[in-house]
Length: 404
Length: 233
Image (cartoon, rainbow over all chains, first blue to last red; front, side, top):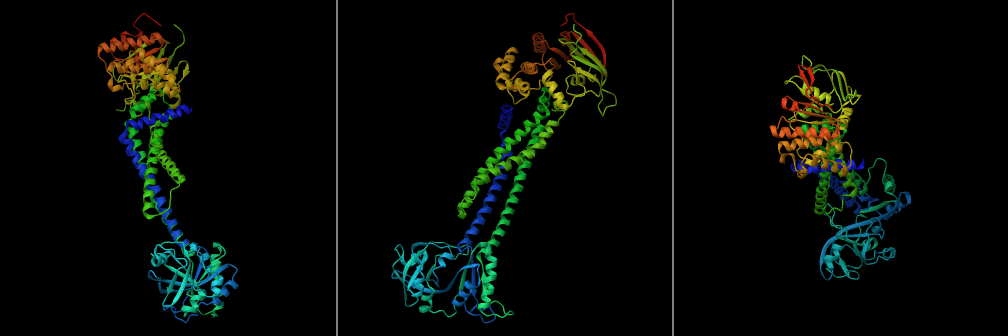
């Protein structure tokens, strides 16, 4: 039985080889279908994971509470964000694990080698934990530095490059503003540019206390960065934080929040939803092209059955059973759609790889996806090959024989 | 002669939906194993239709037909295919070889459908091809052969499945006289060697001369059934 089956396949391959033009055309339809399908799947997943990466840079379990002080679009008078708010948040809510305040100003920063205008932040040691931001050289300042208002700084790679070139910045001194010298104790790992074009590495961090003592803090903190205990607690954490903030700011029920809250994870969720829908749409469109490829197989096979009607009659007269005749044409559909699908996998892989390289996405097509697409393409071809094969099997031998 | 009939058709009627009178109107014939029968008659007499029914390519509208002792008048398409594969060989006027198959592939086809394994069917087919004098043509395609050669291949194919009944429809109709005679000689040789029963549809009296018996049809009825030669199987 196995031998017979491999022979049926062998004969189908020979028929395909003997009609190269027709075979290539049929294969092309499915190859484009499968290729488009794979390319779309890869674009979808690539774009989505790229979106997700962008959001992960901002921290995953993170909620930002931003001040409304000094904002023209906030009608009332807002209370500044203070250490009291930080304590209240940590005290009131079990869902919030860490709170890191931050004050950020744009300042001139210079070293003996150069100068640069950048964002200078006063914050707490936990900043690097909340933002999941490791150090590449040196270390982050600690609680002692905070208590002592130490004149130390941690910088991003852009600052390191602009102010020190290839030199090791750790141990060097930078001057912030006109007269605040800070000793560099660490350099953050590069996070690169965000999609918005914002350079994440263009950053100088110092203890919040140092900032307050030497540069002042006229509007309080600019934001408080909250970390919830678990990603699933994000919503609860935001509700808890809001009510805690309202109490801390002694807001009456009728008053609006005098602060703003935002969560990259929430935005990420939305972005993921949008990109999932888009990916689904792309795959849907690709599925249509696969369907068109399948119809191509059916079309060619119908033509083939019509052209070979007399041959079918001869085979029937010799004694081929309807099933054997059907098997012959189905086998041809299998051979055509399998080779076409394989070519499509190659095509899709090539497209996906080129696009991924151009967009600097990470590898997006798994072996399983490619095998799945090949299997799917083959089954589409075979499904569409069924009708012509059935038609061949149902021909009346005498009518088929007389057919010229 | 034995009492056993290989072909036993009784009152075969064949009607087609779009025709007013039946193409076969009560045909009864009886063929013994090893007989060579010529089926004759003018065009439109129904001899091709009768051959299709005798060859299990088609079923009768009414009437009984048994082949080798078994009733085959009411078989399904699939069962008829099985009977054709194992009991019947066909030779056609226009050869009906499969054009993109080689001589060897054409001759092995019945064995392929019967599930004989490749080595054995090729051995058997090659022996037959030698026998019909085309051993040097194994890998050729039908288009590379002359008419007489094509018919020899077709005959080799028709007998490769070792049928008991060979039906030939104007086997010499597309050939010149000399080649036609060679083909008839070949059929007689095979008949001799393999104890084949031969039914030859023809309107060529010369072909009919080779046969033991002539059955004449006219307007769907048998008008004469007689033995031309003394020799019997």
